[in-house]
Image (cartoon, rainbow, N blue to C red; front, top):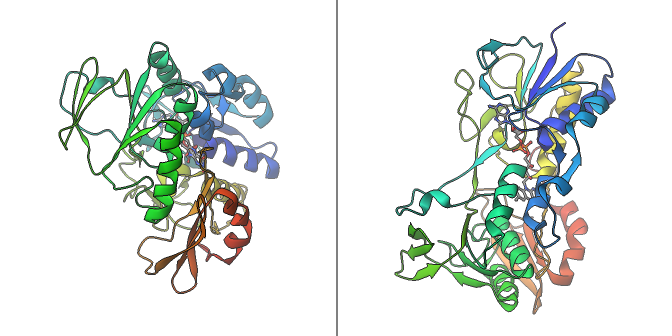
Length: 370
Ligand SMILES: Cc1cc2nc3c(=O)[nH]c(=O)nc-3n(C[C@H](O)[C@H](O)[C@H](O)COP(=O)(O)OP(=O)(O)OC[C@H]3O[C@@H](n4cnc5c(N)ncnc54)[C@H](O)[C@@H]3O)c2cc1C
């Protein structure tokens, strides 16, 4: 019997393998990864520096232990070059079912200047190792992108003693996710730490050294430039498989090709690309049942995201794309409750002490997929 084969040992690949093993202890299982296969929690990457965590410290379970725990073959440093047929370095592998848990690639701005190629992004442990090395002799860090990840890194690095500047095209942090007043509350808290913001602008040129030219004419100096402007699902290899923004799957996490499934940051489930932990956990539980012989649809309840900015505790659950309504703001100072009403509750953003209302409010939100 050919093994069920999972490409990817990130949270999506390993979670589906774990859930599958709860249901089926013995069927052959194989995981393939382009990296070294150690299990780690990716969300920790954006608040690891101030805790002085090395990449080694962030490994929660080494790959040797994962092989034992999952009773699985795990092929490491093995770049898959084709899915149909499944190919690694000219070698073809057979499978009974194939799961694509490939993650997403950081989006890179195309920038002018001889320093542009040195821009870093942190999307896995290897990236984090490079980032730490670059920070070793650095003082000034410029972050492109005031989204969730940019703000988390900014808070962490400023706390660790760096001089941090953030640049974004939007007029406030978390531009597309929260109402202005919530973005400004986060901005004020980060400014109080010493972080500088440049909004409504972008970087056009990076000269070695580094000297950044912004579209509004400002010039900034930096020792390290970090890009945190978003991720794009890894779909390049899915040549015979339907793709849209991500790898298109139905509620069973199944692609248009029989026996090929997908979940995690690379997948688009019924039109939703949700690059967060909770969606992939829900998907992994459903897919494990399907792989074990009980076809099961994924459900997505509302899944609020905790933003790791200790300077301003924040939880967000943005309304689904296209939902019309209005933000209603309650509270004062740094303790705000923003409710998106359509006319029923369709999203929220909570800061400060109001984050305690997360669970109660989440219960009133509509599910994303039922
Ligand atoms: C800095 C940071 C902080 C975050 N914080 C949060 C948070 O606080 N809360 C939250 O909910 N989410 C957070 N996220 C998002 C969350 O971490 C991701 O949604 C999740 O980890 C994605 O897991 P994944 O398994 O889909 O992808 P990945 O972890 O990227 O795994 C992809 C796997 O596929 C393998 N692979 C890809 N292509 C190939 C190939 N061709 N051949 C072989 N192997 C291949 C890779 O080697 C890797 O093993 C954060 C993300 C980042 C980057």
